[in-house]
Image (cartoon, rainbow, N blue to C red; front, side, top):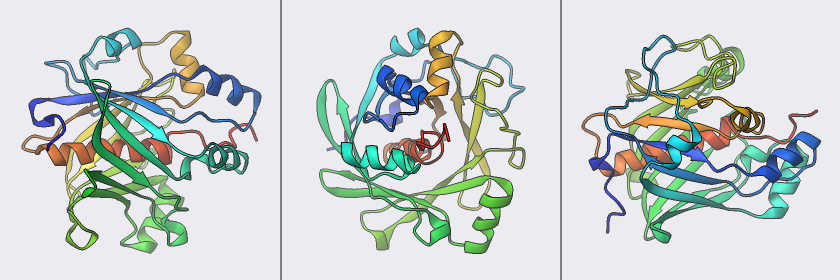
Length: 276
């Protein structure tokens, strides 16, 4: 059984559901976090994710525009409340172990993401996510640390983090299909400094081939503006616009979606030490 058909879509919009309690507790410095939830919506016809800051007619969707789009999936996090509390307290909430359940038409789908608690490739424990369909592995998203010294230099000196998107029904059969490159500063393809904020509405995560050739970008966007978007920004609740690569199949697209969620948790969500 193939849940949905992403090959029929040009792309998706991913929006983290606003959780007011998280905003309030975060502002007060209380170590509290509710399990995340994400709406995955169909990208409107004729709209493409932007790939740089100077692109004309860049779409900056409002909450109302995203809400009106057809739903593809609803994704709900399952994790331990105790884990979230403790890891918020010590400032590594973004590394927590969790599962992500996919829903379609209010019914649970056979898709499941499993994310163990890993401290990162710099400690020889790369971050990873595994996607299964009815218990059968579809693929993995793994922090790229094949070149340990090179990646340590990229992370510490250039603020650039890379994860590999791989498909296969076992670890031994995994095939590297894409890489997602997250560059925080001015050392990447574009200058992402202050990106995804009210100062600079977009932040770009590059989708590249295994050989490093640029394919397109995932557009993390602040939104259309307004008080709610400002509060969401402060609580690290993001919107992502993703156009699928031409010629990619359903499972490759699903793994790219999983890869964006991996990047969201690792690099664009609360750690818990923001007020320290």
